[in-house]
Image (cartoon, rainbow, N blue to C red; front, side):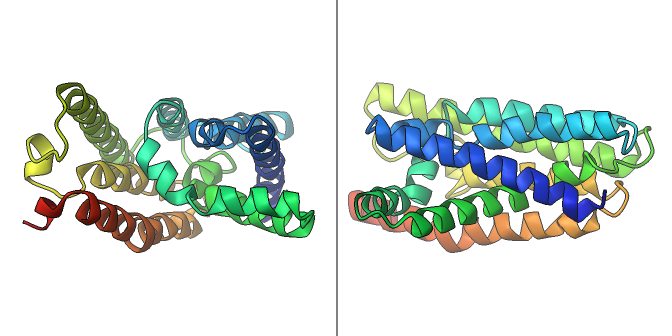
Length: 244
């Protein structure tokens, strides 16, 4: 089995789960379900990729692979109760479009949209998927330590930001300008970028995994071309003082 076939299998599996999730969300008339469990297909696809590796004996499980999978599993589990505004920003136009396509019975449009979302998901997490194919030598090297450190730092920054957002909402604060927000305009997105950068650094020690830099590039593109402009627009509209 080639790396391409391996990724293709995971893409189709992820797509099937995503279709089920979207249809369930529309059936229950609950966009929140889709937003909450958006990364559940990726989480389950990780276990499938590990199962394929084990069953076909593609390669032995390495320490860097274990760390990469544990970190992504932790991140996915955390995503069920986090990233609400980020996920809502990403899907604010997609879900109504899918609902309208179902109403008009445009099933090919629905399928194309789901496949596009699934492809982006798999590409963004291609670093860990590539490690689950050929993870390289078992022992960790300095690149692995760097990658793990970046992932932990990124997840920690995200966690601190989420706590600060929750505390601000409890106090009734509108615009957060303290803590990490006093140094960066979007520290939560900086943490997200660090986490995905760390995954790619881990993938550098895998066999033939260098191509997965595409995942980091797509993630950077989504953050800088989609998330930041939308969030900036929203903040400027809601809080005129944000300009200052």
